[in-house]
Structure formats: C-alpha cells, structure tokens
Amino acid sequence: MLFIRSFLFLLGSEVVLIFVVILAFLTFFLPLKQRYKILALWGKFNTWWLGVTCGVKLKVVGMENIPKTACIIVSNHQSTWETFAFQKIFPQQTWVLKRGLLWIPIFGWGLALLKPIIINRGERLNALKKITKQGVDKIHQGIFVIIFPEGTRQPYGMLGKYQKGGVAIAKAAKVDLLPVYHNAGKYWAKGSFIKYAGIITVTIGKPISVTGKSSTKLAEEINDWTKSQALKESLS
Image 1 (cartoon, rainbow, N blue to C red):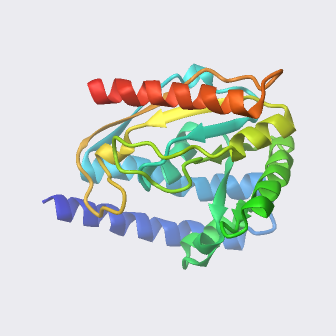
Image 2: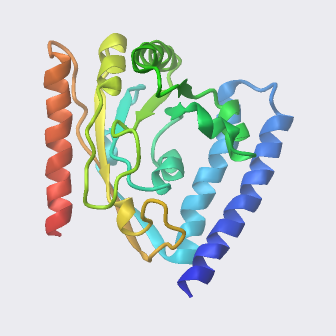
C-alpha cells in the first residue's frame, strides 16, 4: 500500500509538472514575478497532493517570524520535500542550486525559467563570489533567497556542516538571516521513493540581524539555533 500511495503521488506530481512548465513556457514574455506564480503552483499542488495520497501533512511554527521584506532563509536539508513545500510557506523565492539540476528534463527547464543562483561546486572561491553577487541582486529585487548550507541532504536526525554562503549574502545585502528547521526526512527520507504518513513540522526562528556581527559569530548563532531544534526533535 505504501508503494501504491507513493506511486500515485509521483504520477500526479509529474503530470502537473508537465502542465505547469508548458504554461510557463507559453507565458515566457511575462515578468519573472508572474512566471514564478505559475511555476509555484507545482510546489503548492505537491504539498497538498502528498497529504491526499500519502498522508503527509504540514505544520508550520513561527509564521509570524517571516519578515515583510526579502531576506536570506537558511534551512537544514533532509528531503526532496522542502524543495517544493517551501513555495507554499514563504513569499517569492529563489535558490542556490548546482548546475546539474538544470539538465533534468522538464523539472530543470522549469527551474531555469525562475533564474535561480547556479553554482559549480568544483570552483569553491568563484562559487562563493557568484552566490554573494547574485544573492544581493535577488534581495534587491524583493526575492527571498533560500540556502541549504549543508550542501547536500542529510539523513533524518543528522546535521551536516553549515557553510557560510548565506551569511556572506546577508552581510553584503545588509538583511536578516532567517533560520529554519524541519523534520521532513522522518517521513520522506533522503533518496527514498516511499513516503510515510505523518506531520512534517517546519519551525521558523526569529530573524537574526547581521548588524555589528562577524561572519563567524553569525554562523555560530545559526548553528546553535539549528542544533537546539534538532535536539528538541530528538526528544519529542
């Protein structure tokens, strides 16, 4: 039954993705904001459809902490889930992504239409410079920038080392860092086709001001907050 439910989710997700990407291509002449609204429908549909087919629901704690103006969102990375569900939670956004994702048929084409921040992981210094410059540009356009500082998905219950890319953009753009923690990997594990019923909880912390703080201090604040949330999760 779990396999059938998971297959139904995948089938519905792929059908809607094709429809949404075709619609976005047909409206390529529209401003980015309008194209985003079209493509974000896929993420919102997936969040709802996952609940219908697999019983995976969403609970958000701290919605009131989301700033009215664009900032840098720093989140742990456990699952495929957060890549689409965050479109339901946060305002217009973009992401820091590896170039290879754009080569995925249909999905990658849709990503390309949203003009994300693309990096080459093999060029770390140039990647950081590119992330910072493009990230600042996106912030000035009023677009939230989502960073998964672990760089790759981690198994549920584990945290990878947080890189400082998000901190660099926030300091350059002079905007807050918004820490986020979720437990999506508990119900949709890294690399798993099977989804287990349950409630994914996304906790949004209070914005962290970059004013008068070093990059090291800011990284420590984010790490400390994230570890405290992971500890709460492990004890729940």
